[in-house]
Image 1 (tube, rainbow over the protein chains, first blue to last red):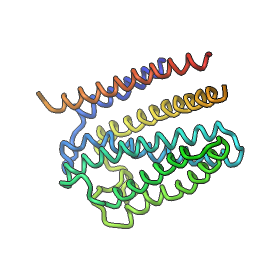
Image 2 (cartoon, chains in turn brown, red):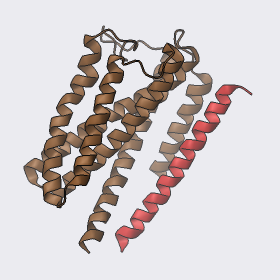
Image 3 (cartoon, one colour):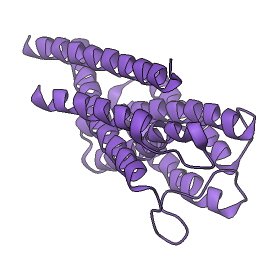
Length: 215
Length: 35
């Protein structure tokens, strides 16, 4: 409980500092604040989908349904974070570029990721039998994740993009105002801890669902 | 009123509601696990 309350305070305090005290990036002006939400959820999309892939591999090696629970929960949460990143990105795009959707390379990439993992959940929902569902989903998850680093890290660097430089820029450095960097890293840490909590809760719910079906 | 305060208020409210919902969900899950 203490850890939960610390997490609440951590994110709440970061929100206050980010919205009221941190300076604005000159080009971004007031929209700078979207950065503290948009990039952490985009980061968690990759973390969650990566965790889904790792657990899919574990399932294929050990045939342990607990790994399948982890993989399914991570894919669901990854999709939720992906939707959050898409919506916050669209709002930011409207403010900066004048349109919600511009088929920018990053926007196109995230659109494909949404399609890939919506299909993953549809696949899970369409297969009867735990073992078969877990096996086919694990194979799909591993295959789908092969595309994720390509879509997120390679495609946007290959084509001209409206997006600004990545956080770690082409010179391999993080060039941010110290206070913006503190708020950003603090939010990144807070959101990652929130993800760990959500993941553990979703897995526990999945196990309860299985136990209730078996009863 | 400064719009930053409005955004901050809404953000804190949403975070607070999500946090309370998660605590209640975790409590319910713990109860079901004990059965």
